[in-house]
Image (cartoon, rainbow, N blue to C red; front, side, top):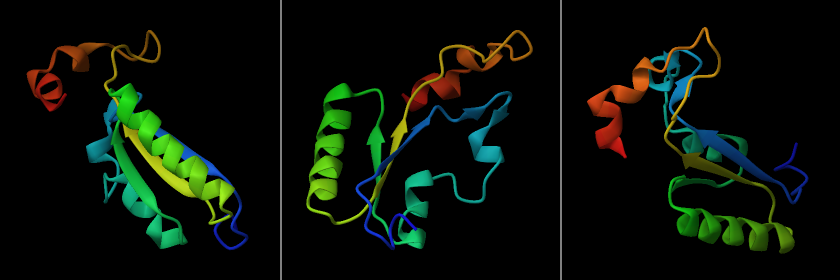
Length: 103
């Protein structure tokens, strides 16, 4: 509906690659969340969520698009997860070398 009505909305997804104890890569057929935007008629943008300047640049573009009444934008900010969600969610993923190399 947001795309149909060209609502000035910016959908921000903070993707730390984990959903409690399960890797995001194991829980979806398409791990690139930003790729889902065009399916719903809105642009999808991927940005390094660890780079505040890049996030700011992408956010400014999305805000300008919204102000021009061009509809919503989906922004996926890929970040690093430093801690678990709770005591039931251990931090064992933090020390995985493969996770650290990604960032």
